[in-house]
Length: 407
Image (tube, rainbow, N blue to C red):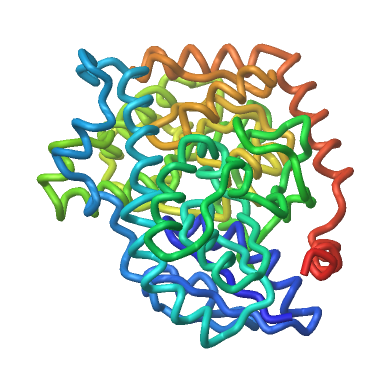
């Protein structure tokens, strides 16, 4: 088979696709990844071809005053957390099924016509490949991403049908025409985070993705006579925040959370957990570490999946990659969501009994939530149940035969 992957967003989107791309390449299939220059490096060590045919991911470039006014309900000021999250979701639906899909199609369709794929495995944010697959008469499936968890097929159908008319394709009446052959996930149906998409093809979450990963020696020397807490803010927010800084007009129209302030609150909160040992990964965000108590250890980055195997609690932003890794290692979570799918993921974590959603992002609120999770044996028991359900899924290599049948 010739398989075309599309990847955009943050590096976590590419890392979610890597196990599947590796399995297909190892089985002898021709794999081409269409992405942008920033994410091309995610795949450079693997036996797949990469084309950096896409522009750098810049969703803020599609935000205009007219669009913001269109997606805001009458009388809504967007100042409350719930209102802001709802407005962001509506804005995302408009962008990914309209102007963003149109631009991505311009960049991906020529590559697809030249490569002639038998199958497209698309990024969850790439709805243009739904149209490309219809144009070429081939199947397409979305790969695991937070966008799949958030997208409501009924809300993106009008935008996609508008593009179908524009490009001379038949319009669709069924919202699930978005996923006519299902979707790929790395969690079992009972623990699905997708609000609107039905369960489909699920495979076992890979323990590690980055080859050759090892923990630094100083981690191996941490005390083990107390709970170990790992805190991380992820990679997407710093990246999007940096892009927003380059487009101040878009940021003013739709401001994003400040990762520096969020990290500061997280570090202040865990500094109060003197009954624990804490590791904080900053993802390169500037952090003031002067005067930190000895139980807090701050680093830029480390192999998160490896550390989670020995962690008692994960203080996380709630990105879908991080949540899946915590499920795979039976790690209870305290989730401090920032944007996108993260608020919905945080609520789902709490509903599933896998941890707590932090609704008060102050140092006091974060500290309280962490201690509540650590003190609740039911959360750990539920997390262990989730890991067993994850381990009962078929291995990722079995996806190859399933995809061959679809083709």
